[in-house]
Amino acid sequence: MPDPIALVRNPEWMDASTRPACKYSPVVVHKAQTPGAIVSMQDALKKRIAVCKSMAGAKNDTWFSFLRAGPSHEPHLRSSNVPVIVISGGSAKKLAIDLCSDYSLAWHPINLRNEPLYLLVHKLDFNNYAQAMSRVMAQFRNMHLIGWSGGGMTGFGAARAAALAFADTLPYRPQRILMMDQDVIQTEVTRHTNPIVQRQLDGIHQTKRIAGLGVGYPTRVPVPKQVFPREIKAGDRVVGIREPIPAPNKPDFNSPAQQFVSIQAPFRKIAQKTPGLVAMDDGIYPAYMVGGGEDMLMGMQQQLNEGDENAALLPGRILKKALPAKPQDKSNEYWNTARVNTLAALYAAEKDTRIDFEGKSMTIELLIKYFFDLGCLTDLNGPDAHNASACIIERIILRLHKLGAFPADVDGTVFSH
Image (cartoon, rainbow, N blue to C red):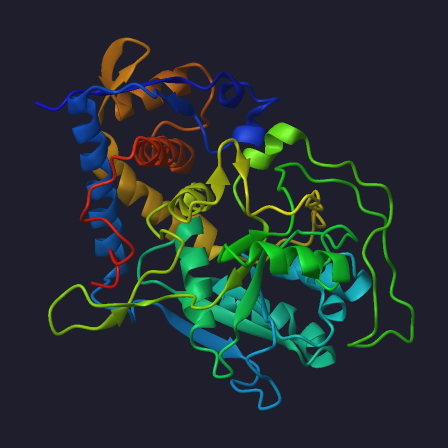
């Protein structure tokens, strides 16, 4: 019988005041694992992939599908254009208000110098966004709304994988894209149209397919309101925040490339794994990392970390803003239903995983009950508990990669074959 996987609590996750900085890390998985425990970790990875693949209904590289609002082809665009893809969800009305009153977001159409913008949301959110964004899209012709679907799969990894799969559908075949989170602020030290930043990106892309336009942080900051001048229009030059921004702390350079990244083509590669079947691989983001570990695993697999530093990060600090608290979208079926179903399916499959928690043998199900009894979780058999379980498995997967023990048959084609 394989050995249990050794791990301990993460005190910062258990403390509500420090949890936001490590919300995806309920536990720390030991560096030292027995050979039998490593087998258990490999089994956990394979089970995670099998469950996700079943939910996705993935049989080939067409498992993603897309909806679109706006023109499907822009004949003036060329491969030299750098489209921006923003992943969003459940924030249609908030973003619409922000975009119509302020231009502090890094991806505001004003800030893109007429480069194409694709707001990527799940298909369950598509109608909400189409209604809320109609005014913005009428004003800025470079903005497009895209809905993605990956069967029954949801999660952070699936959304990022969908973004790269969508980039592969663009008829003008861009050689590079920018991908960012919906709340990233434009600053001078991370502004992608800043010539200094452009030169830094070019330097990183000499050796790396992906570059982070700064070091990401989980906290949000107050932002001086940048009100629209009446005469402003698409293509005008708008610079980022000029206020002094503290440099990233030295230890933070071991964080993943996230929040605001530049990715070079090819976004997916041709992979022939099954005789007679030629398909695209899954891209650099592992879709099976549902709970927030996709950026870290991607960085490991792309060998972005050299020693204790991420060689793909620019030296600036990425800032994020809090979006307006209201109005709320009338529904958020993606987050409240589809995501809940994904997490529940994973929990059902993974709750019996054997672990050694601080010297005591138990299952993840028992560990979740322990965290609930301590008041660390809001439910015992609901999204909060299921999300914590998913994050525990992803910490195990990340440690497995660090140990150099990923199974040889797990590569970038787990969904496309």
